[in-house]
Length: 366
Image (cartoon, rainbow, N blue to C red; front, side, top):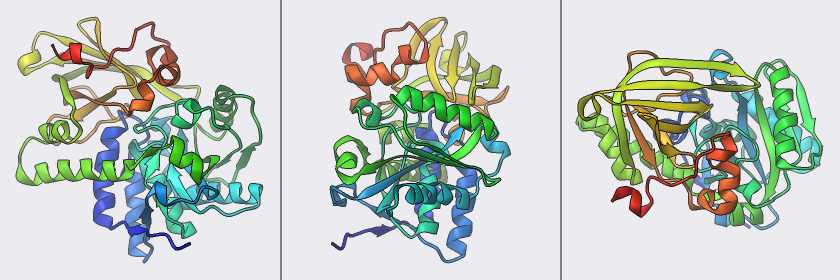
């Protein structure tokens, strides 16, 4: 069957990098290095196409790719598109069959561009979907895990030629434990091809059209920048978000441990928030925000720290003292806010004894 695919122009990849960085909620790795890879691949004559997830046949095989590890390390070890493609080829050899398409594990940060990098080498389309609708740090924090789909196998590759297969595990959390240990041994960053999904599974359990969403968000920010209008307002309008805080970064404490970047950022209020303080804890991504000691936003709502002037996202690995920032919240995909979803991605899944209440819940706005 011939399936329609839509070429992705480089201009849209530029917008994807901006939008995905915002949806990364501080994590997923900076898209910048992936964007440089795509500019080079397009300059060499390669091009990538996007396909609608509902055009997949039920028995199609789809590769789910991402870089895994600590974002700070990802800034130090440069991204190579050939390594991303190799993780997919390892899985093809292991399974003995070819993939129909490739898709993002998470649409947030640089991991939104990883499947494009793989697709440019493999000559297959990118599915317009992911399984987080944002970025999260652990294997069990996906819509596929919420749907109790099979968590194995997983392939992993690094830039030095190491190759790893996690052939079978009993649970998603065991996949996280085993693959994280391997990732740490590879230097706390590696390219991965997660458990392959069928077309039916993608249609039933993926979060759909998120590549298109990220491109649209990036377009809105870039258009506001060109007009010299408020890019923060453009983001809130595009995504139906809420402005939580405005201020200056006064402290940042972070450490790379067990393959994650963990820590806390402190922001002193400016303008209408002068005299107040916000603290935001993170595990790769921003997880919980407190205003003067009171929690005001938690996962799975998207907490985004943005440059107050450009509106572009700031990662947990690049936030620094003195930056003027705006903190905003964006709505989470509905599946993440179901009771089963909150078991996987709610505040208690990150170790915080806080009851989740979306900042977008009706009473929160009263």
